[in-house]
Image 1 (tube, each protein chain N blue to C red):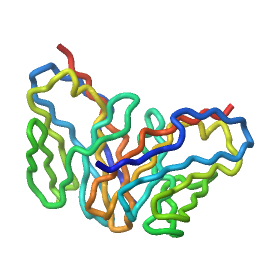
Image 2: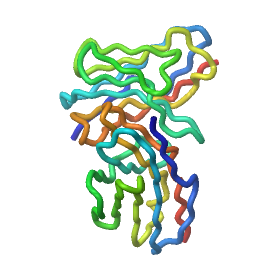
Image 3: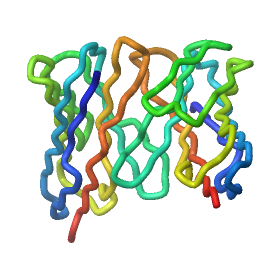
Image 4: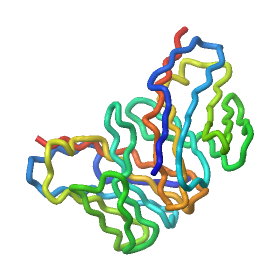
Length: 112
Length: 109
């Protein structure tokens, strides 16, 4: 079974802090994704990566950056957290375009 | 661009059949996924359609019409545990996977 692990289940940060959300997958998948999920808005793609050191913007990249230094790890960075970034963040991976996404359990981030 | 539309909420009775529709508009299409998400949990994969037609998997079936930009998920013999959100997602030729807002299904006894 594919395992996608997100480092924290719950996180509380203050406005202006730099926040790192970490995601690791153990199936040698090429593609990794970061989504946020908000009530009434569904899952929205922030960034994705199709290879080490490669990244592509999703639909809502503003206020976020990402890092993929190793194939198994994809980090989401909030340079200066704001209250409108309070959300559930979901990491996912897949091997190619016809494969299903495998999701981590999510990180519920609260910015106060 | 891409646009995906699903009903927000549906209610059905235990033992019944329910059809959840998904319509989409996209400039590049590889396939369409359906996911199930229980409250507080991560989405889990249900089905993937690339070609037109019906794919059956036990109590769940998924249909795709590429020419009409239309898919549905059919759930038969509904059980209480089927109460969840059902997410339709487009896989395009850019590598992105874009989700609809999801349909929350409530199954009542």
